[in-house]
Image 1: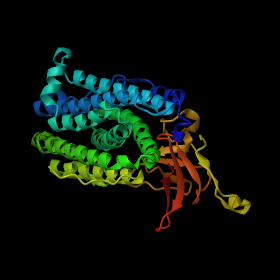
Image 2 (image 1 turned 60 degrees about the vertical axis):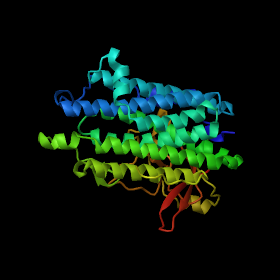
Image 3 (image 1 turned 45 degrees about the vertical axis):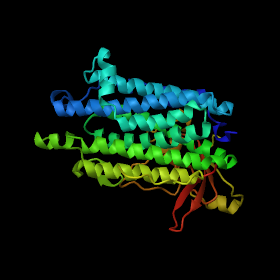
Image 4 (image 1 turned 180 degrees about the horizontal axis):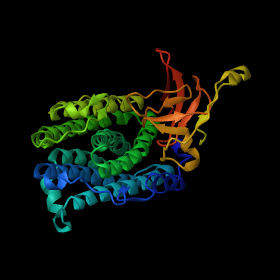
Length: 290
Length: 100
């Protein structure tokens, strides 16, 4: 039974989310907010913003497919209702990040092509591992993959992006802020539901641990592609634009190289995986480094 | 379980010794209005926990009580729905552990 959900209801979700931190927002940000002019005028930075946003759309589409697919696999009514609200959260994330692509100038008739062109193949493989479990209606593996691994990843990535954008791009920072608030519920559901369920299904541990290792590898490969091929920092230096001196886990992102940022994010996410999984009784498996 | 803090402590003397705090809204808007004063965002560098506060290890939000927290207290993190128990670390600080 999902006792921790006894106080959760659609009503509470309404009061916390649409009537709480999303009140008066438009596609997740305040009405009238716009992307900084530099994102439109500089070709390198513009393309990087589109590439980054495509990864967010791909990740959120995976989360939408997983959370909706898990509803009918859930063994109890409370989990089904929670996953119904999570499904709407994920659908909103897909919508707000897709809207950002439109705001950046992507036309609706070229959306599919743009996503296919920029979607990172390693992120797609990461999603496929999770969705295979969901297709098999494997609730335990699906929730670990979705609500601990994918959401844990999103939680740290969004926090890092929020830190980098807080002073430079209020529109995008506000959009990220709302998604971070949603992720709190999602990781909470993952930990609390699996924490009680894995005790009664210890035979699932080895399969879940293998999945975490495989997903973690493709996550690291996605980071490697994203940071090592990122030209924004060099372009900002070239045109004399300052970078945001944002704090992320005690480090100043404004003075770090893309490779150093990749290492910091990877270490942060893997450390979080380890702590979260060990809390619920699953042994963290160290992935190989791409 | 919607009260942010419940206590296992039954001693009246212990209850009297606890420091009391007046909680004000800090702008945290991720829970229904009447519960907002019980939570705040962790500000990372330069931030510090008061004796009536503990960090949720699951979602990193600061949970606030109207009285000083002590080991054994049970707290509830509404933003992520986690039920937590306050413990004292070897370093003498308070932290929350998840009760599944």
